[in-house]
Image (cartoon, rainbow, N blue to C red; front, side, top):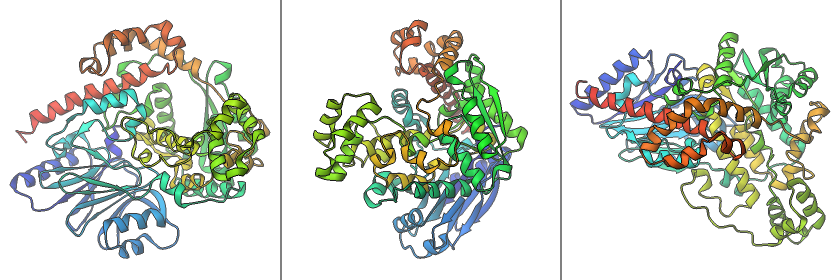
Length: 577
C-alpha cells in the first residue's frame, strides 16, 4: 500500500484561466487513475479521498467541510462555525469548543482557502497554490503530481536541518512550494499562505490550571481512550510491558472494549529487551488477549527502506522495518482499522529525569519552595548532587533562547518554567508518531495520550505535581494503581532495546555504508563524506550515543532519491500534459 492510498485532497478554484482548467482536468484524471474519488463539492471546494481513506468527510454549517472526527465539549461544531465572523474566530472557537482528529476547511469571505488542523496533529496537512488553484492535502498520489506547485523542488537546506534535528521532520517538509500547517494552526491560502496559531501548548499552560488529582487524570485518559477507539470494531494494540501501554490497555478494558482488541508484545533476545513478564501480568490483570512475538536481528537494506521515501515527509517512524512490516501484516490479517498504542506517555506523564523541576516548583511556591529535602529527592531521582540541584533552584529562572529553526510550538515558550518547556519539547518530538509508516498505511494510528484533551490536562498540571513524590510518571502511577499489576507500578527500571538496535545497525552496515557514502546527502554537502566514513566505523557505532543515526540518515537518503526522480519525471511530463 502507498501512503497516498489513505490520503485526502481539497481543491479550490477561483478566477481560473484556460491553463488552470487544463491542469485541473489533468489532475482529476490522475486522481481517478490512482483510485481516488470525489466525495463532496461545496462553494468552489471539492474534496477527493484515496481508495483506503477511512476518515469521514461531511459538510458543517453552510460553508465548512470537516475531514475526520470532531467531539464538541458543548455546542455543536456547526453552531461554533455559525457564530464566528472571521477565520481567526472560527479557528479559535473550534479548538476551544472540542477536540478530535480532523482538518476543517472553508472558503473565507475574501475568497481564500482557509484550513484548520487539529491540535493533536493526527491528520497531516500541506497547503499550496497552483496557478488559480488552491490546494490542501496530506499525501497526494504521484499520478496527480501535475497539481503540485510549479516551483516544486527539494529544499536541501531544510533537509539538512532534519539531518541535524530529526524531530523537525514533523514541521515543514523539505519540499519547496509546500507549506505545512502545524497542529493547532489555521492557514489562509491566497498567494503565499499565511499561518497563525489558534492553539499552542504554551498558551494552554498560561491559561489553564488542571485538577492535579489522580482521579482527574484517570478520567481524562479514560475518556480519550474510549472516544479514540469507539469507532473501531477491530483493534490491534501494542503492549510493550511498560507503564504507558499498560495504562492505555487498562483504560480500554475499563471501557468495555477489550473484546475488540488483540494485543502484541515484541521481545528481544537480550534480558533488558524482554518484557514479556510485565505484559503478561497486565494482560491477566485486565483480561486482555495477548500474543508475543520475537524481534529477530535482521539487516535493514535500502530496498526495505525505499517505501519510507514515498510520502511528502521522510517516514522516520518506520525505520524499524522488520517491526513495521510485521505489525502492518498483523493489522491486515486481523482486518483491524486501528493500531492502539501508549506512545506519547513519556512526555505526557513526565518520565524524563529533569532536575529543572526544582525551578518550576520554586517559581510556583515562592519562598515556600525553599525545600532542601525536596532538592535531595530530585537529586536522587536525576542522579545529580544535592548542591547542583540547589544551584538550579536558587539560580536565575530564565535560560538563553535556543538558536536555529524551532518547531512552532517552541516559538513562544521562553517565559515558561524550564521543566514545562522540556515537556513541550518532548511533545514536539512525539509528533513523529503520527507520521507515515507501513502500519499507518494499513490502519489508523491511535495514540490517545497525544490527543488534545489529554495534552491540555497535563499541560495544566505543574511539572512537580506530575511527579507526585519525585517519581517518574508518579501521578499516572497513582491514578491507575488499582488497575495495573504491582510489577509495573512499582517498577524502577525501563526496558531497553539499545543492544538490539546496535546489532541491527551493525548487520546493516554492508549495504547502508556505500548507499550513504555515494548518496544525495553527501553530494549536496549535507553530510561530510570523510566524517561520515568515520561515523560508520563499527567500533565507533558500538560506543557512540545515538547509534541508530545511520538508519535515520538512510531514510532521508531514500526520500531524497525518490523525490529527486519524481520531480524530474513530473517536470518532463508536464509540457505534454
